[in-house]
Length: 550
Image (cartoon, rainbow, N blue to C red; front, side):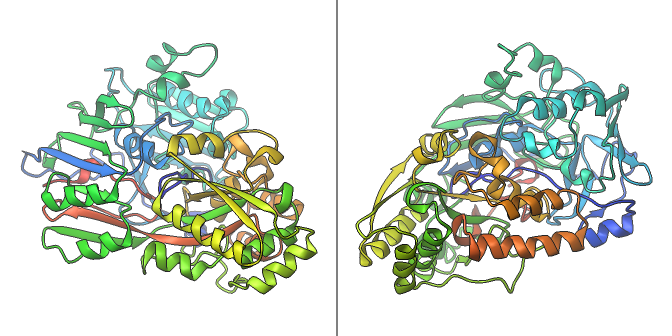
């Protein structure tokens, strides 16, 4: 995932073929870094030093940090720093898996059974010790709770009570029932892969809610930071967890203040004045201006994020012809120039251009109002028809709404737009209701959890992912796409590429579920004295505070 110019964005899964070895995994795009039994896991000791307080300002508001439900970028930033997973991505690589809560792992010959050996002596923030029971509870809970992140592990596990086995206090086995060489990659997911304190969470289960109401606002993790205070809509204060298994030698921030500051101009001024250390998602003018400032570093990288405007498969946009018409009506180049001024590139479908399976030769919609008018007529959508667009109140979506409104007006159609704050917008986006009651268009953005097109596409274009079950807010359903998605769940690399070539042709040309707007660059602005940042294309709009120092 999840979203991103405020919303989040993606959080889902991965897959595999039969009887695969490490060499074949490399072909699939997953390099396994050998895990060693050392409890240090690559930790390097240096001179002790407290880097003080880090101040991050962002335009989004943390709302729900439950790993089984969290799909919001603002929440991801907090969750990432208070929880750990079994494994982690290595630096900036999207394929290299390294130890975290697990020091090593093994699998049987056909990769259908995976065994993880846990780091001993790891403490939760509550003081309880991490055990295999916590791993079984965490992943089983995510599957059974049926919240937004349930699909991630349910792709591999249908009966967690039987398939996740506690071998001993520090060993847990996953019996997946079929070859699953890519299961390993799911364990590094910083959103859904987090391991929670089972003892603590069980104390807060109310009416079979799996502890969700409590976990949405409280942490039960092992991460380097714990939540000291949380003023919703305003500020979250994190402080270092003294018993963190990674240790506190070297320079680390002992406190992190995460503030919600919607106004980009205010955030820019805070960076310039030194009252904030880190921000992102400013407008392109501010990005360009700050790149000339001697006191800040502007880090610009392309991630795996795709930004889009879903078209609800009901009402005036029920027909593929009508959605093709809308795809011709939008002015993509004007949008990228006005919203990003060189800090974004075109998107042409649900698969980002750096991801496995992306088809560089797929069809590209270009602006053509005459073609749009003809296709609307063929679809039976009469001039004067009013379309409804609801979007989160972010500068880029405001610009997209204005451009589409002006384009449609030129050919005799009306666009009624509604801008909402992020929390109110997400309530609509993930709401389960009949498609005919949904807005005709909704904006969002998404990114994957792994280097896998199935993981990226499942929440967006599968009919299993409607409403609260995923991020398919347009209620898109295409029988061929659903069939190919099912066939891709356990596919090898070549099958994935072949299947997604067809899927991209359908969703990017024949039967588009969305206007595929762009792939925005992630522009992170740091004060010049902040060091230790490592960018990873899959860790979108989140920052590992533990690695940063002054």
